[in-house]
Image (cartoon, rainbow, N blue to C red):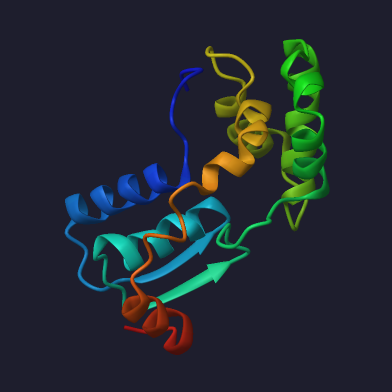
Length: 156
């Protein structure tokens, strides 16, 4: 990830919708988690993705969100901005392992950790430090009819 790369929820929703369109999916059953939950919800509400059903698991959909660590990073943004890479390399596996329901094998944990420690620098706290800005444009753009249908009926 580039240091200036936009990882906002609006961008994630557009990327999800583009992939959905590219794959030409016809009303699939969708299960989405965390940021993916918000991306799938935005795909439905704002970008016309139609699902037979949508199951959201702990979605990043309503502010405020985030673990105690996310809130701590946000409160101490300047301190986390200056952490050396070896500290990031220690924090990321602990953070990811803490989010797993069952313990991850070392190999599987590394698959999740690797993208967060990419060549562009320590991504996790860069993203977490921007947590409030990730919600820009989220609520104002929702279409009430599709929102009510999705949230109340849970089916299309």
